[in-house]
Image (tube, rainbow, N blue to C red; front, top):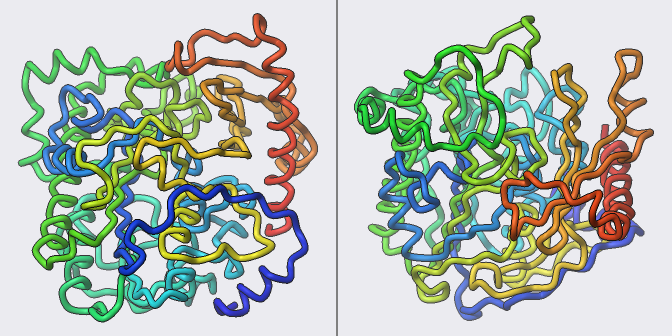
Length: 501
């Protein structure tokens, strides 16, 4: 479905459209900003020096944070890879799109969905994507699913795969629909080289641009060059590691501490790659009119414990996972804060004051409507957008959010603990909800589409950022005031997505 057909379809759909709040109009109405989004993979909220990590050296990102705004309440749109990427590009909760888990089967970004790249092309932007796509299978000979070129990107080089093992493998990359020949180097370096090449040589320099760069790092498998890992093979690092919080999630009993240097080194390698991209942008004289946003697709990965696997399997490549959500509870796949609260840093020279810190909530679904407002685009009629135009968050100013943000993850897998499936924020409070446990006799659809939350926890993040003190029993009036909204949003988003699968 081409973009004009998408807009026509959107205008004809007679559905309730969630109101998008207005924050700030384009601060430079006479000049359209270039836009760069750099998405890390499984980078934890507490993995960067500027977010308080006492071990990992991230000088380029730390300096970048001093040049713009560091968000302390930034969230991915999902708690795992594909859903959060779909939310980022569309402004819609991934459950509306049928993205309940990662790419596979009937789950892919449908052609009717309108992406940031497509909407910006209506304003004359040229667009580029490089890196991890993970929203559809890119090899058309295997599966005919829409890829970056079908979703608004003029130029692209990407991979379908969920992970990347060490140096780049030529079989992984496809450029504009054509398999790429031999490529040497690690993934973050390869994609920054490609993005820099596009900026210098391939883009239409008469147009503003949108560049989306998505790295695999620090997703497993983790194997950085030794020059990075050896930086962290010291007694001081061994001592500091003991102070790190891992989301209050139990770690394996087996000794994996020697692997920590691999993770720390990979984050430093990623920092170096991001620094090289910034250098390209600034050397081309593009820095003054370019919005640059670096963030992550979800919280950090965690190793598999013996209890979780129940002795059935192990996953040694996850033994290198030493990412941290900082003080927050939960990791990747968890709906607690650590599963979706992520780093978020934005530079917009001359507009966002250097050295700003913002504690205003910014969700991954907010990016689409925020960009639309900045460049003067009206949101398509008839499409339910869950994000809001939220540039004010970059200035540490409040904007009204009429619909509370929610995060879901379908915890139907055979684990040793019963995990919640949803979290909803309301001011400083978070409401956590569980569906009834799925039994072996239930199909996923029987469980997923028939049940509503039956159990709740309540936390006050202002006083308890680690979500350790459940207030549900002492504040039942707050639980009762919020659970109806949570159930309504759960059913609305889940059931709309069901129609796409």
